[in-house]
Amino acid sequence: MSPGNSNALAPNAFRLLFEAAPDAYVALSPDLTILAVTDAYLRASMTQREKILGRGLFEVFPDNPDDPATEGTRNLRASLVQVLQHRKPDAMPVQKYDIRRPEAEGGGFEERFWSPVNSPVLDAHGELLYIIHRVEDVTEFMRLKREGGEHQKLTAELQELTDKIEAEVYLRSREVAEASRKLKEANAELESFSYTISHDLRAPLRGMQGFADALKVDFAAQLPEEAQRYCTRIGAAAQRMEQLVDDLLAYSRMSREEVQIKPVQLEAVVDQAMQFLAAEITDGKARVQKQGAFAAVLAHRPMLIQALQNLLSNALKFTSSGVAPDIGLHAEERGDRVRLWVEDNGIGIAPEYQSRVFNVFERLHGSDVYPGTGIGLAIVRRAMERMGGASGMESGRSGGSRFWIELPLATLKHS
Amino acid sequence: MTRDHCILLVEDNADDALLIERAIRKANLITPLHRVEDGEAACNYLMGAGAYADRIKHPLPTLVLLDLKLPKRSGLEVLRWVRSTPALTKLVIVMLTSSKEHRDVEEAYALGVNSYLVKPIAPAQMLELIKSLGLYWLTHNEPPATSL
Image (cartoon, rainbow over all chains, first blue to last red):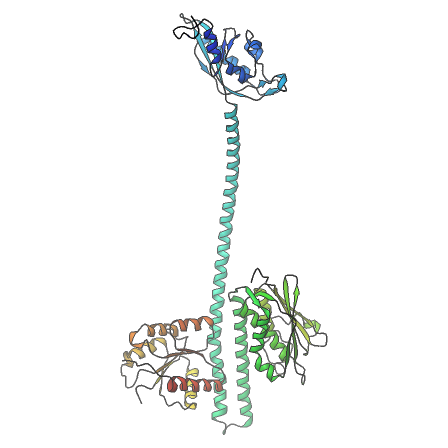
């Protein structure tokens, strides 16, 4: 009978078949001596058949002395006792049982997890002959599970953090919404306030001035000269009031007007402002000179024109009597900003007043000498602030004043 | 009194009305002036409703001078109503107001106003304004045919 004959098996064929079984099995005697092992078991446990056959299971596989938490041996022993007593299979929970690495591979223990099942092999009378100890190496599975657990823990922590941040963002955004609603309300109020000023404050002024003038013109023959002068004064006072209202409106408009920052050619703005003041320049026989090159700046064009117009207008106005205004304009690049200088030969401003001239309604002169409302420079300052720029002044080298406004330089990228 | 030659002044401020009337007199505009004091009266006048039913006494104007801030119905409301009333869509309306506010100007033009003028404070300028207004709208301008 040859091994090739499929009708019967050679006596040692059972051993061969057992050893070749694809899973890890150990056949134990009731006193837990190793009687047979599969090749798969040898691979999993890093052992050799001739070194473990005939030896006690716990003699071959002691606990890892470096791991005090290990319960592998105790659990296995308990399970085997169960099987011995009850002669029923016992599936153990996953065990951590570290494997002794062969000295050739560096020795020591290697962390392993096992899923063992112990099954009794009984004879015809129900007596226990053997125990088959089957183990499945679930180290990889446990590793993945543990990593998954860590991920899960991390994810949970992250989730908690995210929730906290979301709650914070929600609260903050509500605060922001509330603030912006209040701001909108305040703006709307300011707007309706300006609207009222614009409409209602002007009406009585028209009445005052209109009737004072009507009196003077229509009753010229009946009015003594002194009465006519009074009429003129009423008219002039009303006119000043009108200018105040206009300037105040311009100032408040400067505060609430929407700012759209774009690259603006500074020289074009200078030209435009000069054009607006052409009459004053001609009347005052003023000389206004542009010096050097002018860069492009980031600004809201109408605001910038207004600011520059105010500076030029001041330079034209505050002159010593008999001296024609001589105004120089030049741009100076200061890092990523451009400063535009407006230099005049006027009456100048004493150093102690220089910090005050940009305040609203600040005036340094009687309105008979230099008419005005004292709001022009406040508009300049506000305009520059709103465009992310700055403004200032210093005394001129030869008595006049040097005012400046500064804005971010518009790079090619912006234009 | 010719039917096709009349100005309707919608103005609630008596001082302003008086000064405008004076300027019209000074400008030698012979056009008769009718005045109403609020937005609702303006609409009634233009419809020929109620107290304004008599078209001989209250003829349809060739020019309306309309203030913005008015009692009952604002100037812009009157303007919107006029432009949505088929018989009045072509009526020449000029805003004459104290507001220089950008949004007022924009809205008035958006609603189809023919011109927007700001009341000057100086009487001399008021006279100038009324003179040119009369010259342009009542003399040079070719008015549309209005029904009613």
